[in-house]
Image 1 (spheres, rainbow, N blue to C red):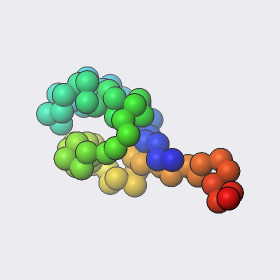
Image 2: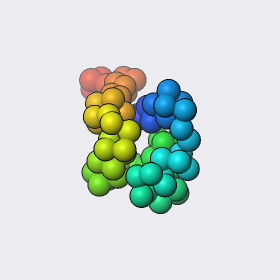
Image 3: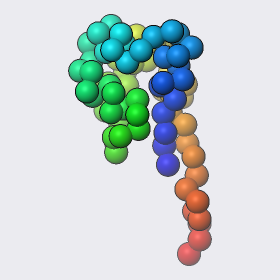
Image 4: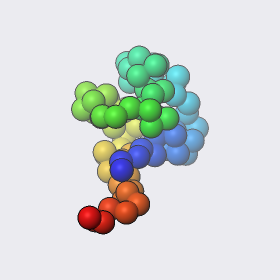
Length: 73
């Protein structure tokens, strides 16, 4: 499973979702869903804008968490 750490990064930078949405020119609803892990896919355009605005790389935001029972047949 892929999760994102956007809320942690925003807290470290003393920003909120609304501020990032305005700075990155991303719809608030889109960014909110992404930050709260409510999306099933990552839009590269959105991810690019987030990285550019925050000065991070995708690996700083995305985290891989192995599914429980993975590899069990």
